[in-house]
Image (cartoon, rainbow, N blue to C red; front, side):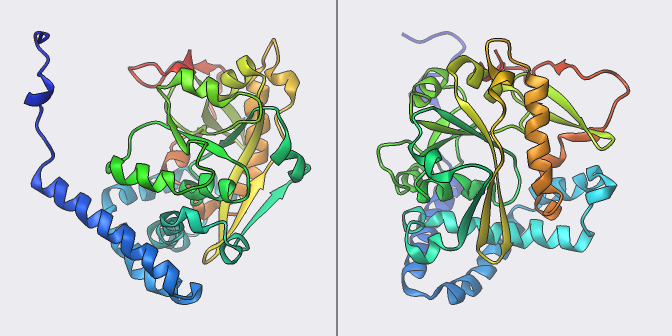
Length: 328
């Protein structure tokens, strides 16, 4: 039976020749770069991949234009030089992202030593605690690699994604390579029930807060305000999960640091949660890192910064026409 006004699956157009060709090129490049990682020393591999990063950046020109247009949003006190910002956004971050092509290799000693964990608390306890944890982060640094590095360090985390990847089949294969096999690497924001399952005792979730999804909160800082989604705080309040700020930076070529800030106080996410205090705590922890590596701010993060209004802080409505489960 066909519903009026909705085409049947057989009537939907299949992928175009251009899309099929692009998908095939992506698969071949994926296997080629993985082969290069196995046979080349790391320094030579890094040099070998700079042209690939430049080609990737050139293909993302429309996105880069948006990022460069957001430069004016930087607060004057931590605004990076234009040239440094341009080079980091056009080459540096694309080169840094390439390590997620071999997520199964990041547990090797030669790769693991390239990513250090910094925390204000006991890291071994973090790995064995039975309390569910929500890591909250931003579109900052090579954030696409963060979930892979955490898993390589023995913290089996699942990242919350808002939209399917363009080449979903390849992306799912890439996800499956990251250990441990029994913990999914990504889950859609629309799968609210599954997210609650992922926050059972001992489980961990990674959520980016600088997204225009769900209910929003404006947190003041340095004469400006920063808009955050409150979904992760609401989920933590309803599940009893710990919330830990988490950012990744690249100091030099393929030398990464993961910064784990102090957890948000439980009193702010208890029976009577105070999302404004929770947001202020997160931003304070995040800014201590962002100000030192401001050239690694992404377009999505910068779009959340605006001059502070004279009106009192309040919860903003959903920014999308379609409400998110995390915004309820």
